[in-house]
Length: 251
Length: 164
Image 1: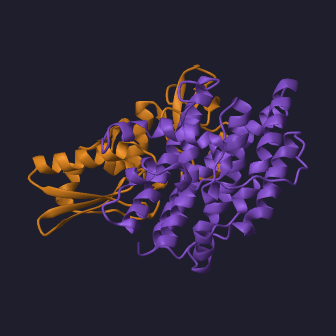
Image 2 (image 1 turned 90 degrees about the vertical axis):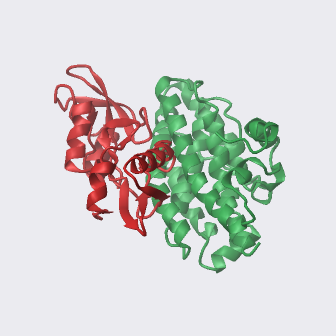
Image 3 (image 1 turned 180 degrees about the horizontal axis):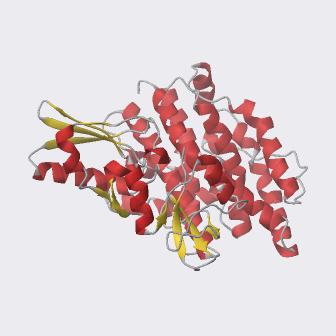
């Protein structure tokens, strides 16, 4: 492959949206209320739309007749480069919305920077996606405030989800070799520079939500390098079932 | 606002294609068609999605090819993301068609933010015209809409979100 670093970089960006889109897509017909059900599937749809643009671009770079479907459905677990945060299970609505919030804040900061890339295609995708992601961020932040500063039970559930998912936040700012190469080339976003703004934003929302900010400094990582939690394998077996059972099927 | 480059003789043909999710609006009024030119006897059409995941785009592409074929043209349809679609590209006629169909057209960006945060009541009910309306959900029946309800006539309705 001519530009392997760019290819891997795009997958690193897009896999987050694919896996999170699949996770919240699982709530289709199972949301806690009709409105949240529709909201989750809408967010999922936006993410899948964005993923298609990224994968089509990656497929073009890969050449050899590769398609967006090959990339989405025919890789093995170790070949997915998403952060561990997005593959965590839905558990309950507190976990679902906290996971969404922790990712949305990052996603928005990331896309703001991606708009300054020297790669025209990535800029176009960023400019398109950012409009959608700012809605996502508003939606999840509102829910954090509403539930955190809600009843005793809702507060306790959000606090528990924050405490348990916090360990996956630091990985968002981890750089792979492909990331470093693309930053040096002016194409990629230097995620390490987003860290302060990220925690400032997250902490300000948590404060409004009367949620205590976890103090633990121990963080879990691995996803970006392809080493995932046990949850991803189960997700993929579900997600890839059709393509693997009926190879080359089309909708 | 970017003016789409559409060949005059193709205008009336493309005006017959509508967004399958909002059938009252032609794709021209929607601002989805960015260019349509005849190049060496083949129509080259450029379209752009309203939202990235808009499932209507494939159907719209097929409908464009079909209607052009019926009118004796072969066509290529290309999807572009840049410049990104904005609700400003919906024409005046299109906004009116939305309202008549029961969908409140998008407000300006600032006002849109106010209504979606619930700080101001500005969205007019397409049924009775009252602005005493409330947002039920930031997300509605399709990616481009939010769900509202009129507190006077109690009718629920869709609001086309502002996208800039």
